[in-house]
Image (cartoon, rainbow, N blue to C red; front, side, top):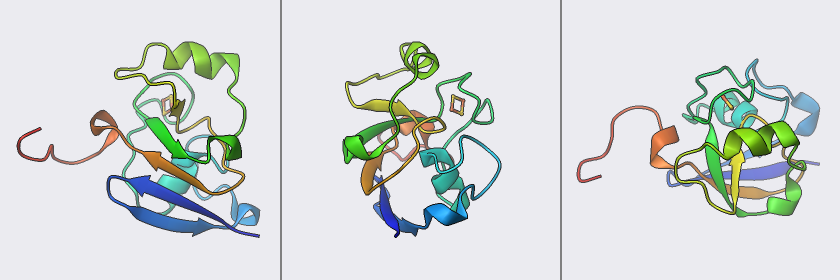
Length: 117
Ligand code: FES
């Protein structure tokens, strides 16, 4: 059984096999951060995936029910995130257990800011 995780705005879809989690060391095993970093998708993670920053903030566009329930720690931390939405999660805490589509806000994207933004 594998899941599809799509990252916007890059529109990169990766197929993940939960049996292979964790894919790398940062964030909870099988979290959006784990899946992003394990597939070369740039997602900021200043605290190393320890629920102590908000740089891994993502907005869930589809499949919110396929993510682990939000714990109080995540909720408190997320409250301080820039550009918080009703569909926001911390990438390092939200563990995937089905297909999801997430958007990485501008602040969480690595590299250069595109011109005009
Ligand atoms: S990487 Fe810091 S809270 Fe997720």
